[in-house]
Image 1 (cartoon, rainbow, N blue to C red):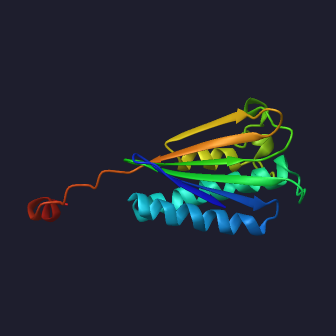
Image 2 (image 1 turned 60 degrees about the horizontal axis):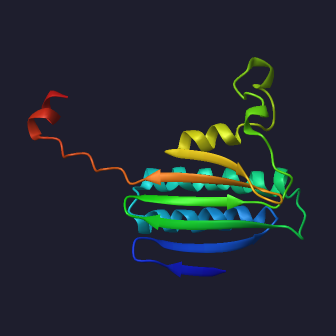
Amino acid sequence: MTARDQTDAAESVFELESTLESVDLAEQIAVRAAAEAGLDDDQQYEIGMAVRESVINAVVHGNRYNRNKKVRLTVRMRPGELVVRVADEGEGFDPSQVPDPLASENLLSQSGRGLLLIRAFTDEFTVRRLVPQGTEVVLVKRVREPSPPRSEEAEREG
């Protein structure tokens, strides 16, 4: 594990084994970073789930459980947002070729909802192929401005 600090951002890089045990660790790292970045409880849960799905995809589909291949988790806190990168060492994939999990023929499928969940739980989501091999997903979660407190009159009305 390496960690680097910069004046405008704090970044930590973690190399994880290609095992499902790494999924829980990655989620914990992301949730802790989200809390430090000022994300509220709901946002912490959302980025945790997005990272969880991303690491599952990296382990299962990217590295195919190959213990000789690693999953790299990079967490970067910037003012107002958290950026998480998950990279595998697999063959890569084209997200446009992933079947629509909401299509009637896929509704009962055991898998295929990961990218849908990741998109739902992040403010930005991108996928890119790495050279010479691998895939990196980039997840961005922005700090939500707190809602103004409701006035007593608004609470009485409803």
